Length: 115
Image (tube, rainbow, N blue to C red; front, side, top):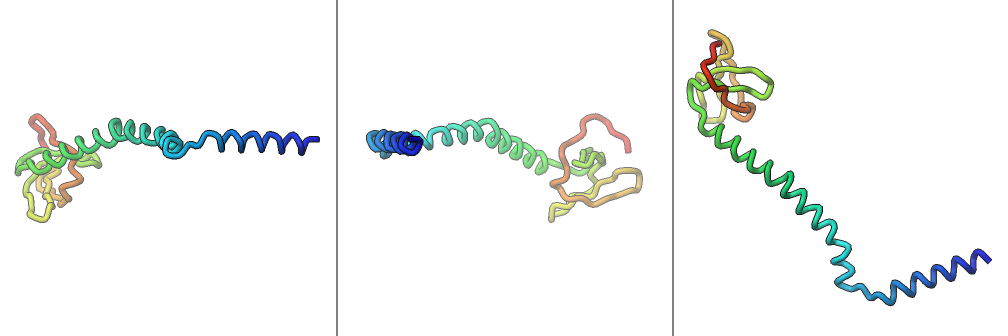
C-alpha cells in the first residue's frame, strides 16, 4: 500500500511539472535571485573597494620627499628618497634608513612629527 501511495505522489508531481511548461521563464525565475544577490554584493562590497583602492593609488602617486607616512605594519617614518622602481627610503629614526616598497604605505601622517 505504501508503494502505491508513493507512486501516486510521484506521478502527480511529474504531471504538475509537465503542465507548467516553464521554458525561458522558468530559467529566469531560477536565475533572478542570483542576479539580485550579485547586484547587491557589487554595490555594497566591490564598488566601494574600487573607490578606496583608487584613492590609495592617488595618495601614493602624490608622495614627496619629506612626507611623514605610516606603513601597514605600524611603523612611521619620513620619506628621504623615492626611487623610479617604486622603492622608498624611509628614515624611521635619526640616521636609520630602511627601504620599503611603495605599496606598504597606508597613508600620510599629518602634523609635525619628530623621529
